[in-house]
Length: 478
Image (tube, rainbow, N blue to C red; front, side, top):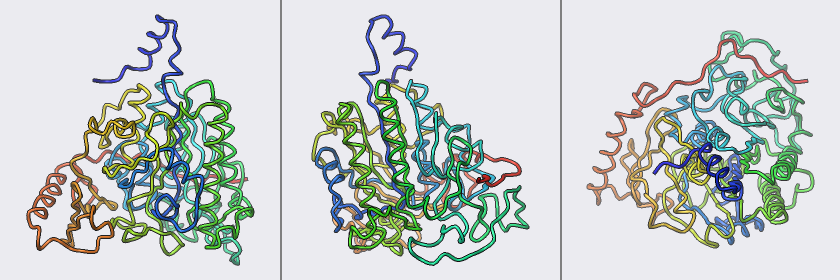
C-alpha cells in the first residue's frame, strides 16, 4: 500500500492534535570516497576503527552491498534509486565545467524527503554536475557546503594531484571562461588532466575559497563540524543530512592531528580521521537523545583503489572494475532500539535502495518514474521474512553490462566465468563448466535486461535523458 503523503500526515496530525515529528526518523547518510571493503576493522581491516566497530556492534553490517565501479554513477544511483545507466548515461565520471549532469527532472532522495517535511542538507563532495542547474540546491537540498567533484580535479600547482608532503609541481591554470572543447581539450563531461581550473569550496552555488593543500587537509574536519552544527540546528524537526566525504580519495590529505597515527600510511591515517568523525556524530546524537530517532548509514561510493593504499580483501579487484573489489562496499546501518544490534545481512542490497527505504520510513511519496531500488526497511528492522529480495543484480560499468548476479551465482559475461560468491567471495574458482544451467540462467537474465538498459552503448529504451546546459563555465574561485 502506498505511504501517506506529507500533506495527509499534516491533516491527520491537526485532527488528532498530535505531532508527527516524533514518529519519523532523522536520516544521516555518510558516503566515503574510495574506501576499500577492508579499510575499516568491522570488515576485517588491520587498523582498528573503534567508532565504526561500536557502530557495527550496535547496528547491522550489510555484507553484500553494491555501489558502482566509480564515483558519479554511484552517486546517481544513491540519489535516484536507479541503475546509473538509467539516469546518468556517461562512460565514466563527470569533471569540472561539465555540460552534462544529473537531469533536474529526476527526483532525488532529497526531494522526496523535502516534500515530506524534512530539512535537507548536503555537506561534502557532490559529483553529479558542477553547473548551477545540477548542484545540490537545485536537486532538493536546502543547503550545500562542499566541493562539487573529486579532490584531484584541480591544478597540479594547487596540490590537487600530489599527496600530503610531496613536492607540488607548477603549471598554468585554466581561466574561468566558457569551455571550448577544441581549445581546452575537454568534452561534454568536462575538463580533464592539466586543463582543470582551480578547485572551489562551494557554499550554495558560490565558491567561497580556492582549495589549496591547507584546505584539503582541513576538509574532513570542516565537513564534520558543519554536520554537527546542522544536527543541533534541526534537533526539533525531521532532518536528512547527506555527508559525502572527499576522503579517502587521492590525493591523500589527513588532518595533521592524524598524520602518522595509523602506522600504515596516509590513506589509513585518513581512515582514522573518518572514524573519529563518525564517533563525534554518533555521540552528539546520544547527547541530544536523538540516537533512537536517527538512522545513520555508513558506506563507500565504490571499491577502493589498491594503488592508493586501499584494502579490498578478501575481495578480488579494485576501483573501476566489476569484480567484487570494485563494486561491493563496506556498509553499516545504525539505529538503536530499531535495528537489531550486532546483526549481519548477506542479502543483496545496493545504493539504489536508499531512496525507497528512506521514503518508506518517512512516509514520503515515491517518484512516478521507474525505480530499480528496493525498500530495505523490513530487512533493517529485523523483519527479514517480510523483505522481498531482488531477483538479480546487474553489474554495469559505464554503458556495458559486464556481469549478472542472482542469489549466490555471478557470471562475468564476456569471459564466461561463473562464481559462487557465498563460498568463494574472492572469485577464485570458475564453476562455469560444472554448472551450465546457472550460466544459461544468468545469460537469460542479461538478455532480458537488453530490452531495458541494453548491454552496450547509450541507446536503450530505459535510458532517460541527461541534464545538459549550453556554454558551461568553471566555477570561479576567489
